[in-house]
View 1 (tube, rainbow, N blue to C red):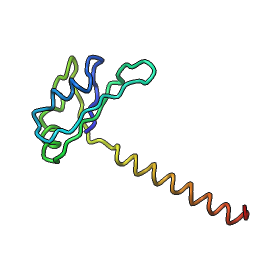
View 2 (view 1 turned 135 degrees about the vertical axis):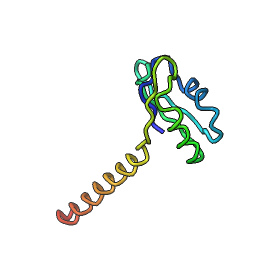
View 3 (view 1 turned 60 degrees about the vertical axis):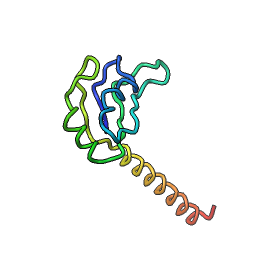
View 4 (view 1 turned 180 degrees about the vertical axis):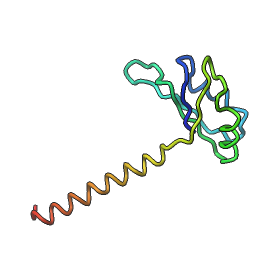
Length: 104
């Protein structure tokens, strides 16, 4: 589950506390800048069961976590990973074809 509009006061632990009443909550992660350590204003929440994911989406979207109302959306992370794998495979196939054509 993608969680946006997070304030600078929200950490992974804070996010976990707000969602811990969902039994299948697995983990929370707030994305931060590697150089500065400041949060980028979004994070991710993982559930073990789809029912909890759906319930959390309905109940928590727009609720205040810290000083801001959060925005919840279906995460497309897995879709992006699949796209990256597909792009990499296409590059590999293009390289094989190029080697066959040039004989190198």
